[in-house]
Image (cartoon, rainbow, N blue to C red; front, side, top):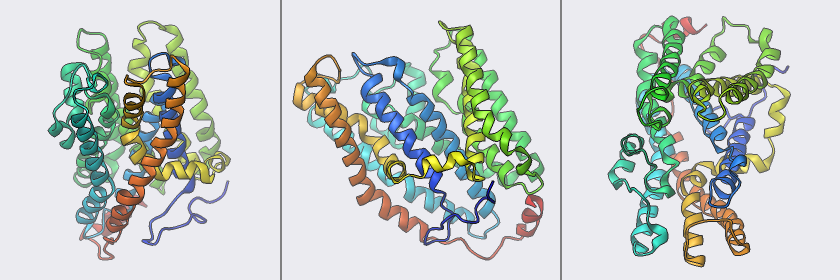
Length: 384
């Protein structure tokens, strides 16, 4: 296998860019679109709803990239300033604009039945990234057009906590702490799914989803550890996703109705498989080439804004054109849905071009300092 990283392009700011990972993000975005437009919809095809797989991969990919970034840059003197500025510019403006647009559209058409939802969370819950807590308390997703944003709430909560793990704990304890977090998440899910507590608590809050979030970080730590010769495990890394996915399917077949086993152990199995796949691709596995196409990378580029707004586009088009919530029960509904797919891509591209891309570029203009902290040499030594 080729030596990882040596032939990868860098951005104008010097940050390593791996096209395959952009392509993976794009492919997962397509899965989410397909799932929400054709599976998780009235008269749709629920057996084809693979959006949950994409969500798990998003978590793992985010954890891997953020973990790698922290490890590589944590000894820079201005780490926290640059880290915070880059994350704010990358995620917050597009998110806030999308949330405000959705709330504005709902207010404009507030008298229409297709804008009514069983439970609606307050605007401040979305702006404070606490909507996942509201989901747990109400056992509902709230405003359906904003339902996917619970995943962003989890990621933002992770971004706040993760740097402290790296800075407050010695390097030799990082893996132990994060593995402990993952196992604790599994234990908490086991308690929730075998009790009378609302199952949604096991799906949308940080403690019970901690394994999916930190598995990517664990992969980043292993990938950056020079004491581990990953070349010895390249074949195993490529096989692990298949084995772990098969194990997830197997426990689903054991308990096909209640799916308690899958809800408890499935997220860890699936996310661990995805983490192995990511490491293998970053190391140059042949699978990476499949995700380097311009088509997948385009969707990867616009994925964030598409993810934020696609349900609004679908709901708004069905409401304005057919006067009802989305469904696939007639030819007209199919035509609106398919058209909405293209419109959602267009809206995502526009928001990416007008808001996300320029602000992300500004965030990257905040350069990492070449000056190291007093402990920088020690950190480098521990990572070597």
